Image (tube, rainbow, N blue to C red; front, side, top):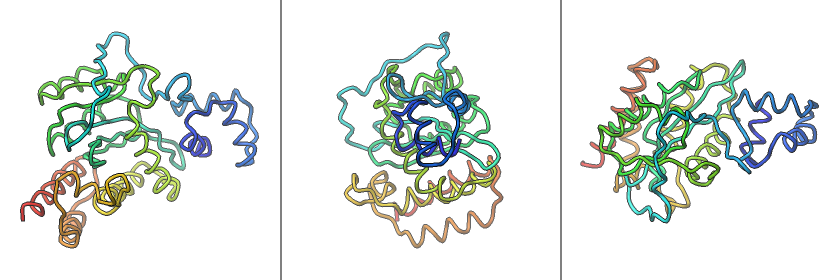
Length: 273
């Protein structure tokens, strides 16, 4: 499954036939197409043509909101946030990662790991992201995680416009798809996490790097934190404050919510100063 994940991340338009050939040719893994299909179903992935990959299955009873981003020029932070779910291979199993990202700045506002595809971890990630700011539009796919009433209620309470990708439109959430590719090639494939706790600690470090240090060509070689908050920050001072937060806490799920909230406060303090 780790090899399948690498092939699929690089070429998400590959179906079970082509993935089977790449497993044989480049990974020396000789399995049949039926087993390849079974493993892909376990992972929750499909070729994006003619269908997009679908980790989050739709619930026909849930209301589907229209896609609001067609021909929309994204010109400022908090205009559009995107979210999605991706599969993360562990040494002895797998887990699922969700994140909320500001499309204009590429700033990752929140993220969560879960051992299952229940809706709770998406709702928790949304609540954490809204502690930073409120977007004008929140975009997602039509999966049950994003059409469940708990998720919708949080967005409505925050007066956020809800946008959902059209079926079969794999490019509607392209910024978040690019984030998954970056996270996997720069982190997941390098470290091969053994447990979800190990992955959680690793993503904590990586997303701090992604937001505060990693420069993006699409942003004019600026960092996401600089573009999102509109001003440059003192990275040395920020790193010291973050180190004190990390040293003083254990990484439970609830602690990570608090850490993220404190980190966002640090950003605001640094900017205001």
